[in-house]
Structures are given as C-alpha cells and as structure tokens.
Amino acid sequence: MSKILVTGGAGYIGSHTCVELIEAGYNILVIDNFSNSCPEALKRVEQITGKSIAFEQIDIRDANSLEELFSRHQFEAVIHFAGLKAVGESCQIPLEYYQNNVSGTLNLCQTMKAHGCHNLVFSSSATVYGEPASLPITEDFPLSATNPYGRSKLIIEDMMRDLHKSDNNWNILLLRYFNPAGAHPSGLIGEDPNGIPNNLMPYISQVAIGKLEKLQVFGDDYDTVDGTGVRDYIHVVDLAKGHVKALDKLNQKPGCTAYNLGVGSGYSVLQMAAAFAKISGREIPHEIVERRPGDIANCYADPSLAMQALGWQAELGLEAMVEDGWNWQKKNMDGYHTN
Ligand code: UD1
Image 1 (tube, rainbow, N blue to C red):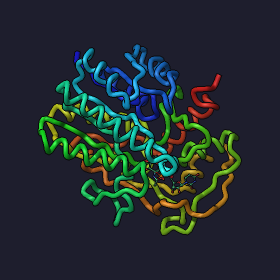
Image 2 (tube, rainbow, N blue to C red):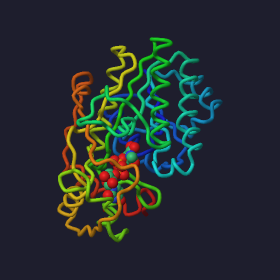
Image 3 (spheres, rainbow, N blue to C red):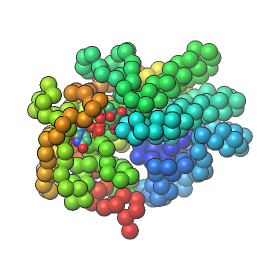
Image 4 (cartoon, rainbow, N blue to C red):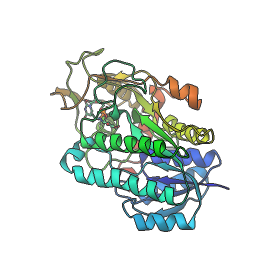
C-alpha cells in the first residue's frame, strides 16, 4: 500500500490529522523533531486508533536525514506540518523561523523532487491575507505578511507556485487554516502550548481550570459586534478531515491550488469567553486591555471553494469546539506532561 509522509505529525493539527488518516485507511509515516511536541502525542494517537505508527525523529533542517529517509521509503505524498508557529516569537527570532519553515521546506521539496514524489499538502495559514480589504476572505484576495511567521508561510506558498510553474508534474495543495480550536472528543489529544499560551482558546481554557488568573481582552473598541476581535474558529477535527479530502484531491492532479479551511463565520473574544464559561460552568474573569499590535478587527473565510473542489466543509460548531477543548483540558491539566 502506498505510504504518506506526515512531517510534524506529533503537533496539534498533525496529531489530529494522523488519527483521521489512519481511520481513513492511509498508511502513514510520521517525522517530528519534538521541538514543540512530544512522543506522548503519538502514543495517544495509537491509543485512539488501535494502530501502531511508523515514526522517525527527523528534523527537516537536516537534508541528509531526509535524503536517507526517502531512499528507504517510497512516499506517494507528503503532508507538511513541521514548522514554528508563534507570531510574537517570530519577531524575536526571525532567522529561526526562516531556517525551520523556509529552509526546512526547501530541503523537503528538493528531496521529494530527487525521489520523484510530486504530491504535497502544505499547512498554510489565513495569516497570508495580511489585513483583508473586505470579508469574507476568498482565495484570490491579495497576499501579504505582517510578521516573520506570516512571511515564512507566504515565501513557502510563492516557492510552491514557482515550483509548479517550472514542472507541472507537481500537485500542491496550500491549506489556509483560520483559527483552529478544540480537541479530539476522546480527550486524549489536544493543544499543548509551551508556557503561557499566545492564542485565545488555550488561554481561556487555562483561566477556566485555574492555572491563569484572568483573560486579558486585547481591545474592545474594534468595529465588531461587541468591540472585541472576531475570528473564524474551526474545530481541529474538521480541519484534520480537510487533509484527508486534500489527499484524495491529489489523485485528480489539481496543480498548485490554495483552499481556505474555515467555518465561514466568526465569534468575538467575549462570545468565546461566554461560551466557555457556560459549558465549563467555571468563571472566566476578564479585563479589557490595550489592542495587541498587529491584530485586525475581523477575519473569517469564504470556505465555498473547499466545499466545491474538495467536498469538505466544517461540520462541528462552537459548542463541540468548547466542549472538546474543555474535556482535553480537564483530563490533562498540564497537557501531555500530566501524570
Ligand atoms: C494568530 C496569528 C495567526 C496564526 C494563529 C494560530 C496573528 C496576527 N495571527 O491568529 O497567524 O495562524 O494565531 O492560531 O497573530 N485575544 C485576546 N486575548 C488573548 C489572546 C487573544 O483578546 O489573550 C484575541 C486577539 O486579539 C484576537 C483573538 O483573540 O482578536 C484571537 O487571537 P489568537 O488566538 O491569538 O489568534 P489570531 O491572532 O487570530
């Protein structure tokens, strides 16, 4: 049976995607350097699926190891998650971001090319739309970057488009994620941020469990429903299923195409906090503070292209996202390091 390489398969979106791939019958091999993930996540994937996972600890910056891996295995396609992803950190250590994300992807593509593997699904982000001129966002909107993390995603997307132009044997799907949230309903895998979370959902969840004192709401004077920022939160299981659909699509030789993976509507920060308080039965104390530099008021997808072309749409709503995120948090107070 043909094999799929999953880079960064122990991470938040990667681990959920491994579950869906295995359940859809795919034969996968995972590589990860565990820089922001841990082996326990893969053990949990094995527990959920009842299947053992082929795994190698490889860093995509290490071209020799990739070469060696590809000489031992024949991969039909690669799903590429491995990369650094914190916006704030990317402003502090931009070179690390370019090295991991851009050089790592360059190594991967060179190795794929050398071994005749031309099928790739890339983990992109809605961040490539910069500050959108209008809403909802469609895939043909102009692209721009406002920080090194976003720029690394945009550079990779451009690199992919150039690669496909140079040789149309390549089939590359750029999946632009909106805001992933929630966890697997089993409560066995979920988001496990290092230190204090940057993103809203894990932050609220740690306030609910009592690890953090209160939520700081970054601005309540935006032009939105209640003045707080609105985002398109998408259940991570829906997102994971989008990757299975993307792999199926590669069989149709789609060329290089980008798809929005979002729900198509948004919730504000206060709406998210209220939903979490209601479902968890815990208080979510909050205070309004200054806007966070670089934030935009409103961001949500037009996901209709993914619906038409991939036959994919988000099925889970806010309640499932919050319930599953809370279930994961309750069962794993300290993420994968909980005893
Ligand atoms: C950010 C990144 C995006 C990345 C995504 C990963 C930017 C510009 N974008 O999106 O590239 O792909 O994370 O999920 O940084 N908020 C608070 N208090 C908090 C945390 C967040 O009020 O403690 C607000 C933010 O102002 C925003 C919303 O919650 O309105 C969502 O923030 P966050 O979860 O960080 O995601 P994004 O900024 O949308």
